[in-house]
Image 1: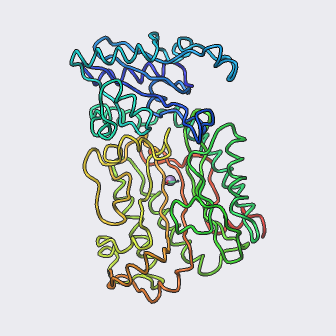
Image 2: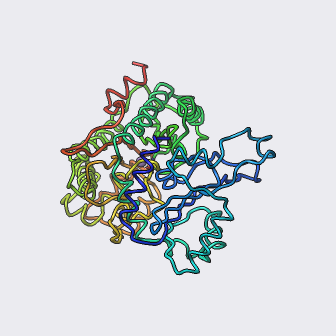
Image 3: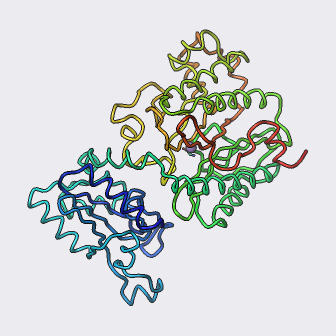
Length: 462
Ligand code: GLY
Ligand code: MN
């Protein structure tokens, strides 16, 4: 964890925004896979980590705005626990590392919350996403699990988003470490991709690189010859000549900060002519978006710039037609690019998505509803300290093409006869991570092979 002064400062900044009441931060519990003693890898709640730093299950933190005091609640290990899990510091010792001097047990927390509720004090909490924490809120303060997200404190959500969105230098250092591990994961894959190799073999090597660097993966690995399926977690195919392999994978470092990169790699030593053509359109969209990053520009405009670059490229090769601006305004390009240009990244790979995309990406305003645009996670103005991904892609999704074609959708902008010949193409995405600086942006981590020449060279077969 960081030095305790980081957590003290973070909590003090939060306290400045509230006159009264208290904020309850629920840490996560172990989450069972198939029985209680066989849990998934433990992942702490990111807002709890941000304000209290302690990466252990079964904790809750309270900031009392009236008293100006901080509390950590949890249970010390019994000798029975120590037999199975080894000795560990007491809650009180751990809390001091986060600059918190007040402790209690979970039943003392329950008592304190019930008392606060009876006194009519406001108990701010964030939207719970795990069933255990929803049940705690039900038990302790009578918030029905089905209504918990709606009853979460918008004031607290907005205050937490405002703080967590701006990454400090020490956070950027952690994120950059995660991105560097992520680059190594991708370089490992590039060297392995060739006919006869299984997606699972590459996914395993990529996962190994993350674990060997002392961390974890930051989200389930996408390692697939079917890159047109955006979040494809199937790893059962064997690569064959003519395929392209899409890797979207990232490391989470020991401090739980994440990296997120995507690469598209030809299974043959070089890209085919048809692959080069589409790859270069994606790359142009990526580079145009990255070059425009600076404080004050809306990420919506970065997204639209990428969309227009995709549409222009597709028009140049005859898959789209008509006026590019009109096509993008209507949403016709979304046949090939049905998602957003990127998202915030930090302690979560889609940073703070549990707090709600309208607060993280839209300053509380509603999201767009148009197909494609509705999947943009971040539309607001960029500010120095934001860390975001840039990841436009081109995807040929046969089912979507068939549906749009049979519905004669956007026939003024799409040449379906030409598109038909690409239904076996797959998908392409490149992704990089950027810090918004005072006057532009900075690529985080060591550069990853991205141009056709760089990717072919990184394969090491030429
Ligand atoms: N890398 C996974 C995603 O951005 O959704
Ligand atoms: Mn991403």
